[in-house]
Length: 522
Image 1 (cartoon, helix red, strand yellow):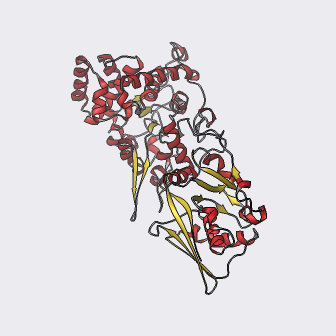
Image 2 (cartoon, one colour):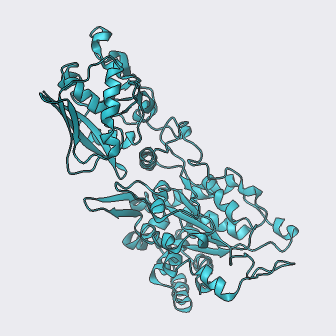
Image 3 (cartoon, one colour):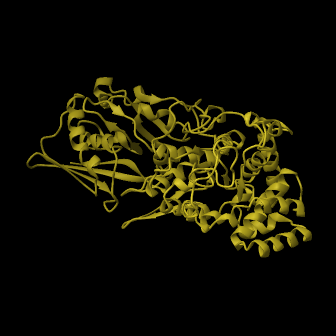
C-alpha cells in the first residue's frame, strides 16, 4: 500500500516542504530511503523500527520504500523521523491516513518511542502555512516556538504511542491538542536581554573619560554605522563595544521574526524566551574562527556568525589577530547585507544586515605611538607593517567610524566633563531614530548606515558650505567614492542626533574626523 505524509526541512534560513512517500510491497523484508538522504536520514530506519516496536505498533516485515520528494534536493537532519513512522503506520493500515490530511509532521524519535524536539520549526511552519497546511503534529518541546506562527492548529506529542487512537477510545487527536489562543505571538518583554551571553549589561556611566569614543558609540548606534576603535591595552575599547546592546533600539515585529527564525534554524533559540526575540543580537566570535564559521558553510550551508548577528552587532575583538582570508570574506556582506553561498545543486542566501564593531591594538605589543612610563613599543617596523596589513584597505573603507582611544593623561582629567550613562545615550538614539523616520517616510525601515543610492541622496539635505567641505576632504584625504558616501551618511546621522533638518559644515567636520585611521595604513 501507498501513503503520503507532509514534512519539511530547512535550506539556508527558510523552510522547504518535503513529501514523505511510503510504499509497502510484498518481498524480502527490507527498508530503503531514497531522495538524496544524508547519514542522519538514512539512520532514521533503525530509530523508526525500534520506536514503533517499543510503542506497541507492528513494524511490517515486507519491502518498504521511503521516498523524500523532491528527490533532487539533499535531505539532512532528523525532522523526518515522525513523518516516516506515520507513513509506515498508515501504509500498513495500523492508523487511518485521514488523520494526517492537511497536516505537517515534524520530530525526531528516540528508540523507546519518545519524540524529541528539532531545530528550525519556525521556518518550517512558516513555509507550511504558505503551502496551505493548517495543522502541525510536532514534539511537545517545540510547542512554544510553534505557537508564534498564527493560524496553525497545534498537536503535540511526547511519545509515539499517543498516535494510537484505539487506545484513546476513538477520540482522535483531541487528547494532544494544544490550546494556545492566549500565547503571545509577539511579546517584546519576554525575550532574552542578550542572545549569546557575549554582551555586557554594564552601564556607560561606569566608563571613566573617553568622551569622544562614547560619542562615536552613540553615533554608530543611532545610524547603524560600522565602528573601529584603536588604542593601547586597557583603555576601554572592548568594554565600550560590549555595552552597545544597551543603547540599541528593540527590533520591530518583522525584524524580530527574522532574527528568531535564524536562531531557530541554528538551534540556538534561548529556552528562556517566551516570545519572539526583540533584543538586537550581539555576536563576538574568537579570532580562531574559520571563514565558514564566520559567513556560514557546509554541504547544506548553515548560518554563520554574520547571519547570527543579523539586525545586531558583530564584534571582532583584536581585529588583526583574525586571519586575513577570514576578514576578507566580510567585504561582500558589509556592502550587500546578504551572504550568498553557492553549491553544485543550489545557491543559498543568508541575511546579513549587521553593524560591525571592531577593536585592535596599534601593534602586537600594543604601545606603538602610546609610550608612557616604562611602557615602550618593542616591535620593529616590519612587524608593525605585517600586523596592520591584516586589515586591508577595502575592508577599512567600509568602516564609517575609525578613531583612536588613547590612555587618559590623568584620572582627574579623565573624570572631568559630563559623562552620559546608558539610559541617557539610549534616549538620544531613540530620538534620532524617531527624527529619521519622520524625515524620510520612504526609508523608515532602514537606518542611515543602510541607505544607498537615490534613498541616500533624498535623505541628506546638505547645505552648500557642507558640500564644499566634503569635496575638499575628498581631494585632500584621497578617499574613495564609497568612503565619501559613508561620510555623507555619518554626517546625516550626526544631524539627526541634533534634530537638524539639514547637514551643516559642523556635522561634516565631525564626520571627517572619524576617518583618521585611513591614512595610518601602510
